[in-house]
Length: 94
Image 1 (cartoon, rainbow, N blue to C red):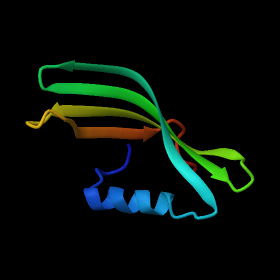
Image 2 (image 1 turned 135 degrees about the vertical axis):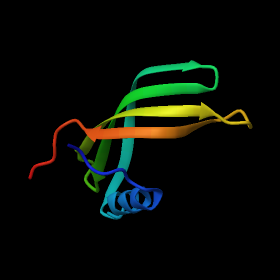
Image 3 (image 1 turned 180 degrees about the vertical axis):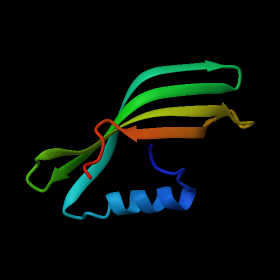
Image 4 (image 1 turned 120 degrees about the vertical axis):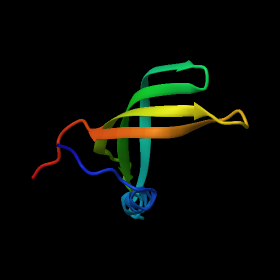
């Protein structure tokens, strides 16, 4: 079940492909549902929507994903994603 783990290059290509539509303005919009931290580890549970706005102002939801991100506090005091699990709210059509 599910897709194989993606590498950084796979994710970069995926985002380039998603945003390579000059006829539309696209953005991922988060809805943060839960977050907690303890010491130098934390997690965020959220739902993300890919919204595409056409030249005439019409907004269309292109994708909706659930995610759980594990974060680690770095030495410089910033939080960085250490692991990420994402899956579509609705399974892709085959």
